[in-house]
Structures are given as C-alpha cells and as structure tokens.
Length: 519
Image (cartoon, rainbow, N blue to C red; front, side, top):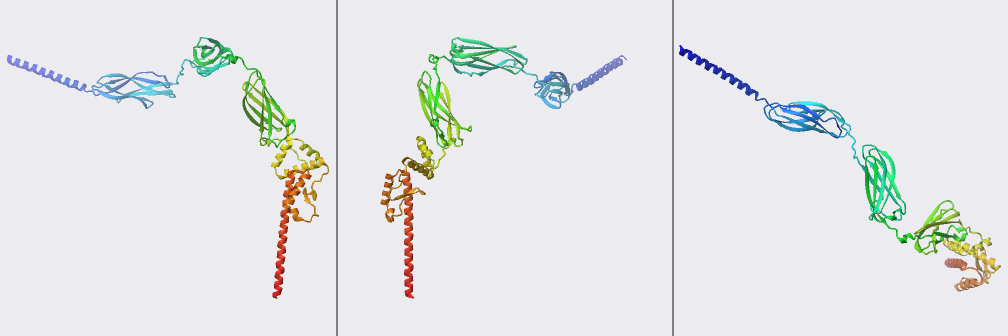
C-alpha cells in the first residue's frame, strides 16, 4: 500500500511538472508573438519659429518615433498648403525616437497664413504658421560721395576751388545732418579748415548735398599734393572721407599780370558813302593793343546785320602777337552772295577781337543801296559816275561781266562825256557821217567806189583816222568795226545773188535762141 501511495505521489508530481511546463511553453509562445511588431513611424509636432518675415526661413520641429520592433527608413515630408517644401530621409531602429527640423525658405511676397504638415508613411501632423511683411533692412552708416573736384584735379594756387559732396543717411532712424567740416592739408603739413552748418533731416536713404568754395588766393598757403577731408556730423554717426588734388604754386611772373585793354577801329565801308549791294563787301578794321606788353591777337569775328534783321557772319584767324600800344590792320571780303537776300537800307557791321588776355567788340553802321543806271540825257549823272574813281571802275568791271547790253551803256556814257567836254566836235573823219540810230560812222553816199570802201586796207586807214580825229573809245571802234564787217558780208552776199541772177538770165536767153533755131 505504501508503494502504491508512493507511486501515486510520484505520478502527481510528474503531472504537476507537465502542467507547469505547458504553461511556461504557452507563455513563451505568446511573448514571442508580441516581439514581432512591424515598424511604424509616428509623428509628433514639437516646435516652430513662426511668425517670420517674408524672405526668411520658416522652421517646423517634429519628433519621429518607430513604434515597431524592426528597423526601417522613411521620407519625412513638409507640405505648405499641399505644396511640398522640404523632405528628409530618416532611419530608425525598433522603438527608436528622433527629433528633426524641416524648413520652408520663404520669399518676398509670401506674407500670409499657411497650414504646415509634416508626414511619414504612417502618420502626419499639421499646424498653422504666419509669414509677415519683410522687415526694413538698414546698413546703419553714413555714406559720403565726392562730386567735385575729381581725384588728381590740378589747380593753380591763385584760383578758386569748388568742393561738392553728398552725405546719405542709411540708418533706419530719421536723423539730422548737423554740420560738415572741410580740411585741406598739403605734404608739408600746411592746412586750411572751415565748417558748414547744414541742419537737414531725413530718414533712411535721405541725401544731404554740401557745397563749399575756397575763394581765389586762399590756396596760396598750400602746394603740391593736397588732401581734402570732409567730416559729416549726424545725430547717430560721424563719417569722414578724403580726396587728393594737386595745387601749383603761383609763379612770380604770374603775379605781374599784364594790364591794359584792347579796342577796335572800323573803317566805314566805301568811306561812309552808299555801298553797292551787288558788290562783295570789303571790311577793314584796326585791332589796337592797349596792353603794357605784347599780347597775342587770336582772331576776329565779323557779323553783318541787314536792315531787315538778317545776319551773315565770317571769321579771320590771325594768331599774331601785337606789341604794347601797337595795332594790326586786317581786311576781309564777304561775298555778295552771302547777303543776296538782304534788303537795302542801313546795315550794321560788328567786329569782335579775341586776344589772349581780353576781348573787345566794336560796331558801325553804313548804307547799302542798289546802283540805279541813268539815260544818256542825264549828263550830270553820267559825269558823277565817271568821277567816282574806284567805284566807277568796279561798276564797269561788273557791267562788262553782265553782257553786251551793259557795254553799250558804258559807251553811251563815254560819248556823252566827250560831247559835254569838247562841245561840237566831228565824231567821224572826212568822208564819213555819223549814223545817230546805229551810233556808227558811215561813208558818205557820194562815194562811187564801193570796192575801195569794202577793202581791208581802206578800212584800216578809216579806223586810224577815226581814232586820231575823235575821242571815241577803243570799245566803240571795235563795235563799229564789227558792224562794218557785217555790212561787208551783206554786200558780198548781194553781189553773189546778183551774179547768180545774171548767169540764170543768160542761160534762159541762150536756151530760147537755140530753141527758136531748131523750130
């Protein structure tokens, strides 16, 4: 019995152990199923830097955790109102957590409110962000820009110097440009200082121009390379800028300035008498140097103004040194075509001389008129015209260019003068009479020997007698000779026609006589 009890007891222990083993095995099975959870990336929003100004970067911070038991890699994406703006690849092991920042680089004009969404393949979270107007960006400085003089500018110490610069406020705050200092200092340390009160105010970008003039003679203290320094004093800042120029000393020769002045003396055209508007205008003037030393006369400008206000101009390049209290005479001819459209009347002649140290101007008036030609009966007018000297010669020259009609007028005037001076004088030699209509000498009709009159030798003797016994000019003689030659041609033509008629008549008579004999 005891053995049976012992056996039963052992059997019960084994049964209990088997049950425990089965329970442990089942627990292990259940536990093993829990360890096989697949990867899952959960998203949790942590922070954001908005609002930001347009043009800045908007950042959103998220915590990504892998809820599975296995490692995985996914893309974490940032969307702004449905438009992808950033993406980053993330690798996490089982149950691993990592924080990451996704960025949207905004631009000008992006201001407004948006929905930002960060998402993985398994989860997503959204938040609102705000983009504001861009902030004003300022350089916080004063900017100085020289306008003049330019770098390396050369100036004589005896001259005046103009300095100009612009001072610009680039601070965001409005401030006042109180004053400016200007300092000139040469290589030897000699300096000139002064200041300018400005008192102009403005905000960011406001420019304050400053001007300063060093009067003539002030720079004589300086020589050589000289530095110009300007300092602008504003409420928030003081800025300085420099520029170098070259100053030449005043030579002792330059100190002895040539003093004096120039003047002009104009000869009135045609001696003050009326000038022929059809002729070239000859201008004569005297440039007078009143300087204490020789000065170069560079040139002269001439202007003629007609009575109607029209003008014509000319210039003469001279470039000649005129001594002290000396003068230079110059002439210039203006072509008549240059004032062909001008009206008669009182004209003004103006001349301006340009000297190396000075200039002078002088003007005078004169009368321009058109020459009126008169008839032969106006003896006094013809005599006046002949007595005008040079003007009469110029008029004759002009008339000779205008054709034979003007030549006839001159001949008539000379013949009229001859009759007035000598009284009643035979105009033709013996055996000739004066033809008033043609104004030529013709042989008297009583002469029977026409062949001698037409001969060359007889014609030459007639012309010689004509020249010796009358005051007719050579031009009149040539005119008469031409007419005589014309008459000779006509006479020979008539003789030829008469000869042809005689021969024709003789032929007809000869034919008729022969014809009657045949009958």
